[in-house]
Image (cartoon, rainbow, N blue to C red; front, side, top):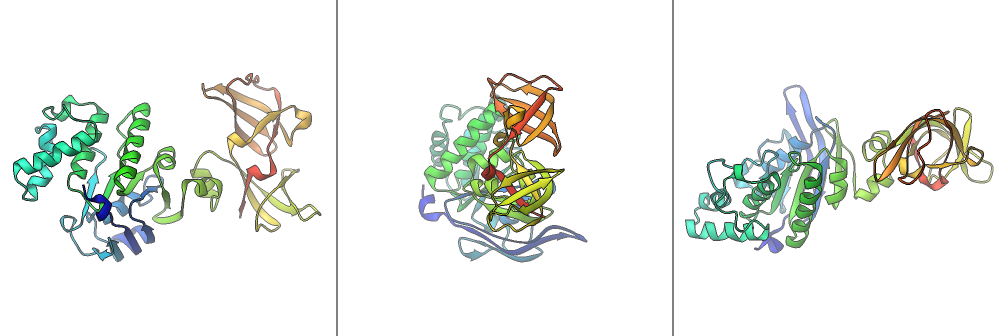
Length: 354
């Protein structure tokens, strides 16, 4: 397989997509480096699937330029672009067996039947599907159908492989396994992949970089670690992972440090390049800890405590509103109405300017 030499990057330069008076994608620019997996992430209607379809050539850009492998493909059709797409529905031919499904693409590209079937068999073996060649899609599990769809896209050896919500039809346990298979395949073959999902944990698990979209624009892009630890604003802090958001004010504490104050409670925080003034504090649930009330930064009452196996989920009614925190699974569950103490380290709070 020649993907190692063929991998091409994708560049969007000020790309917009309009449907009449509605702007679905608004002046979007980004670069996908060769041999990386980049995820388009965002809520429903944010423009991520439209962006993916403009890479594939299934939608025409209203303005801007699309480049693949350094070549301007803005005005080229889908058939003229060196890309292949794995659809959410898998789009397998139900009347064809697995081998015929995967070899269909090479045959349509004028390969002989023997050549196409040899190429298909190679990809099926790569994806652990040898022995299933004669089965119909209806005779396969969801995970097997998903891998057949990947094999059918890979057999054409595209410069860019596109995934549109590829795991949405799988159950939670199978979703984790298949997303890891996709990631391992991408890394071993050094594929250039653009991956669309609305699932944050899926995006964090598989991506080299994530592009988060909101309202047709890019809200923030970066590595999974950057987006989680350094959200650019309230939307990002709330969208990537769980976060308790508290509005208040940053005040100088007299010793070159800062304190965050809200509802009459002030706590020390660390915030690089932050200045006194209105701010929002983002507190991740796993960074909050239960302590005796006398040792706490905040006191409140327990609204509920749910045991979820891996951890205890506690909702605390505090002066800062309801705070969600995750405690160790072995922590005794507090009773509803019990007085609780909550604390966190100064460096564990994320300060967002308002």
